[in-house]
Image 1 (tube, rainbow, N blue to C red):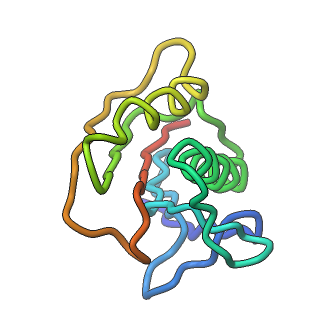
Image 2: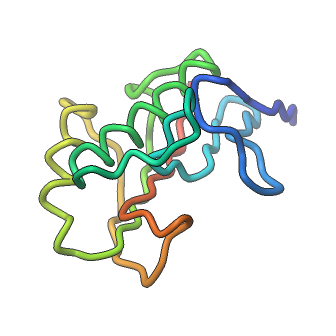
Length: 126
């Protein structure tokens, strides 16, 4: 099996001992993305919708760096600080998966990195 590290300056740099994504064979395993603007390093958390949009933009950049897009995504995990955010997150998320959406779970957790409200990770296949 081949293993290739995927990295792009169009998404936030890893803030720990992990890669933005790893391509193993034809499967891309993406680390969770939070709403960091990669150009400024600042959090984008004005509203949950704006925050989710930045997360999805970051995911899109990582997918693009692996020559993939949202159509390649087969699995998503959404972690949110409160289920009260579910509807707003889902509204933004749905714009990225208009047909044949991936498998998914969405769970509320106690705390996320940098105290953000949403983190999303994806797995994609060529």
